[in-house]
Figure (spheres, one colour):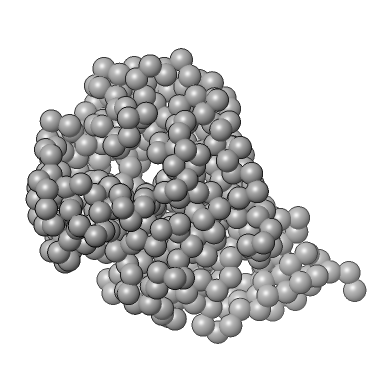
Length: 444
């Protein structure tokens, strides 16, 4: 008897828009052809039957990943980053435009990025462009080339080749991007509110150097510019919960504004950072437990739209692991392989259901980027899928991490949730045969 599909997956808990359902998923030519009730009897050339402790989830979409290749591939590279993504059930990443040399601030910079991915894509990859002083004329060309939007900083980025935009430059860039209905994504911290962190092992000095008002002041300025120009704007890695009322009010009045937060802000707290543990340093910083609680509430009430990792790795030397100097250490947290278990471990303690967490980490970022065929299990969507055991647990061991440098604050933590299989376009990821595609704005 002729099979109906290339692959059929069957499970008692298949993630759907309304929650989990007992279902069969038919996959043909790399896409989901149909989703029907369990017991329908779809036939496939291959079949996967989920165990009782497993759920079928859409592959995650991580729209905030620093891969740093080319130019700083000693920090991270496309091979190691996308291996880590696949191990963590992430089937789509969108790469940030800075830390690579050249940055993605021109079409030639984008071409260098694309070339660096060849033979190294274990998952699908898209790209953000960058908005920096002097590249206003490049933005439309980058948009036409297929980047998903444009990242900018409102204070120094940490790398010289990606300078920040002053207030007038931000408005000009947003006006240009609004003219072709592009998307501006913003690292929003006010430079006048940030001071130099004192040298030393203490986290408190670093935290005090980047207070909550650094975010709230910059976000207010970004909202004003969005209101004035009509641009679509996405706020990156929201750390300060004090900003939530500003965001909610702006959206109520019609400003086209979305926001994200990250696993580290939802699960780590300033009062529990060990002495000299520079793996915890990121910008903006991890804040206190009260702030964390309010970020969770912002997700639950819809003020924050999604959760992405802001995977920003570097070498152990740049993290000053040996000296423990928070003032000197590079600010970035590596967690691409661990995102879902990190957030799920905290969510289950707070009574937040798995299906809600998955929406924040799959459909949420997919919708912001305009990847409408990603992040959901539905007919005609991409067959990017994950088999996940939510009640299984594991301890984070550096040797099991695929990131180029296993420097992460999650080492030795016990996390709930194990990714057992990752499928890209209906095929289980084969690390000997990279099969990820290049993604461009406007594709499904």
